[in-house]
Each structure stands twice: as structure tokens, then as C-alpha cells.
Image 1 (cartoon, helix red, strand yellow):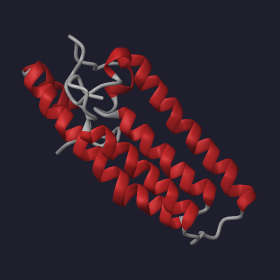
Image 2 (cartoon, rainbow, N blue to C red; image 1 turned 135 degrees about the vertical axis):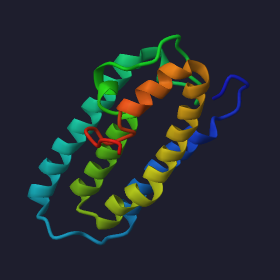
Image 3 (cartoon, rainbow, N blue to C red; image 1 turned 45 degrees about the horizontal axis):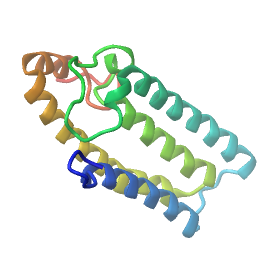
Image 4 (cartoon, rainbow, N blue to C red; image 1 turned 45 degrees about the vertical axis):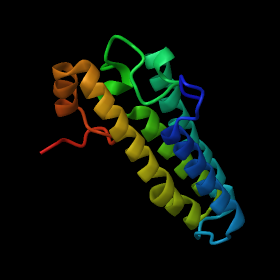
Length: 157
């Protein structure tokens, strides 16, 4: 809920699109050719990586995690996982959802992550970046210039 009591649309979009990706994998059977005894441990391992990245990111920004698009802290997060990507929570969520698709052996679940979830996350991240730029000004611009958007080590040209 936002400060005025209404649901934050970007947050709702993120939740609904993530659940839709999982539901598609559960409801539509189009498995890829990977044995279940291999897919499940691989998927769970990838899920663990995604969840660890989310946890590391949340621990780094603490009170700023739950909320609207507007920044909730007086300092710009630039350390920890934020050294490698401007939006490591969203990267972790994407990795975790891909892992669910892998563990279900579902092409459609993995595809839905990229066609439904990721665009919503990018939309929310862009809104957040606009608010961060307004609040932190030049500090944000410098950080955004040297830090990749979502994928670590992807240098800007």
C-alpha cells in the first residue's frame, strides 16, 4: 500500500507478472528435454542464487526495500550488490523465477519471465531511477553512469 492507502501499481504489476509466469508453467505443459531428476536440483540451485542475491540486496538497503517507487532513505545505496548493478533485487527475482521454470522443466514458464515479468520490472526500475535522479541529483547520475542497470559487468558504451 502507498502512503495514501492505495496499492502501488508498479509493485502490483511485479507480483502479478511473477505469479503469472509461475502459473503458466504449472498450467501449460511444454517441457524442455531435461530429466526431472536433473532439472529439479539445477533449478533449486539457481533459485538459491537468486534468493541469496535478493537477501543480500535487501539487507543492504533495509528499510528502503518495502515501499513505493520513491526513495525512502537519505543515502544512495552504492555498496554491496549495488556496486555491480543498480537493481540487484530485480535481478535476483528474475533469476529466481527462471529457476522455478527450470525446476518445472517448462519452456513457457521461462519465456513468461522474459515476456511478462522482466518488462514490468524494467518499467518499475525506470520509475525508481527517475525518482532517484530527482532526489540525489549528480550523485545518482555519477552512480548510474558507472554501474550497469541490471546485468553486472555489462559495461556501458
